[in-house]
Length: 362
Image 1 (tube, helix red, strand yellow):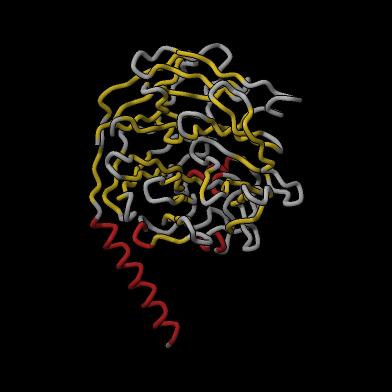
Image 2: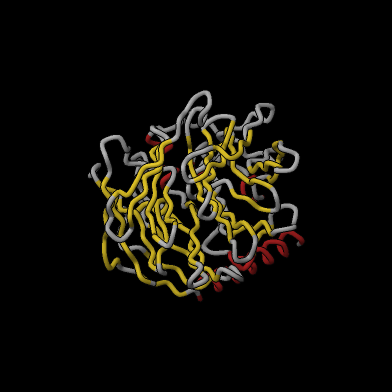
């Protein structure tokens, strides 16, 4: 009898959640304009770093060429390249190069290094401070991009790490660096959703995404397997799950066990047929947050293109507002930004001479 009661309780909870989801407005959006920025022959067509910044009252579109450790600054209005900021690598410079970057105000840039050390530099590239964010005793690979940047909160630097295919309760992929003690600490484990029976496939579900909500003094997290958001409030210890951010059906592991051949047709088919949440983006002018949701697609092709839904939340309460359906499947939301309340999302093209964005008005 107790199992029947438990089943009924779970069914009722699931049904209630589904009714709440069904109440959410879903609408399609169309682009109103496309813009392009030229790329030189040295710049690859993938970007770990991309950021819109305002310096001296002027808006710049910036991107990182991680092969040459160079930040490109484009005048946003003219789309023309304004200047380059290159960093020396090796002894006396940025050791082993730059993985990602993040402007801190108008006078400094945080550079996430590819190896042991990360850096704070001024706008001329001079080193202000160094941080040894990679602790070899922890044996976890650190990573960073524009959509999973290292972020400063409460005199700590919070950043991501991974061990491919590790989904154990004693594994803490989020690390923190104490600015006061000058050392690395384990910060947070994976959410409970990762500890289901089965296997997540050793790749796409390993990466976490986050954004600094400077208005509310917190960091907001998007975990690929979780249909809820998580926050780290200033002054609090640990992450808090936001129940009223829940959307769509729970995601189940694509495999029953780890007995699969990585990157085989069968592996790609199962991965592509499993939905995944990705990066988040904040628009302070309208006080909203967007979270990308990649829909399943029946394909055995590696990195098959998927349709994308953008889940829209109230930034302050993180309550669901609506779901926006993008018109095509050739977008890369990880390369996106807001400007003047317009959303710009990168279009994936075969043209290596330009990076192109479509503009949306919500």
